[in-house]
Image 1 (cartoon, helix red, strand yellow):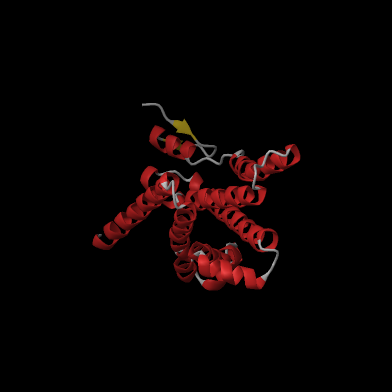
Image 2 (tube, rainbow, N blue to C red; image 1 turned 90 degrees about the vertical axis):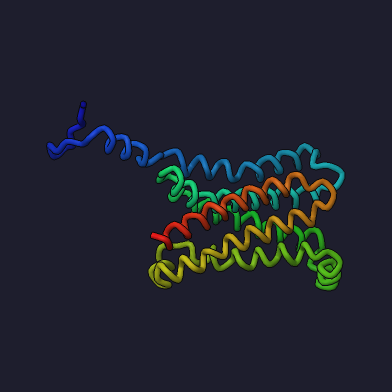
Length: 218
């Protein structure tokens, strides 16, 4: 069986070499994610310049921003299950970036609604919330994600302590559930797409629950 020699002369087995290779840093990962996460904004800007945002451009912008936020949020929630199921190390390196981009799009989605759609008219906003509860659910998701974004730094982990920081960031799953409900209630008629995201989120929650039960039994 072949072996690999380290710089200090020690030898590594092929299994250990493969493990190190699988967990090796991917220099293109974070820049690629950065470009990909900003792609929806680029596409919208191009369509706005071309005048192809549709008959209701404000609604189209809100829809694109909201969907981008949901996709990135679920992707961030998938990082830990992917690491535990497949032994990958790279999801942990992009989880925070995905979560921050999700918050970025949620905030843009909300600001577009408040500033552009409703013109910062508090009376209209309150009336709209009373008529359409999905707005309240979406706002609740934004409220939950805000402290997570503010405590996403390494300094916050040291300040809060890892256990308390970890418990706080479990709110991301609740925010994901609220985001799916928000999407479901907003669509109303064709709910096939919200159901897909609901199924993915349910699967992630089941995986997390299974690992938690196994850890307790051990």
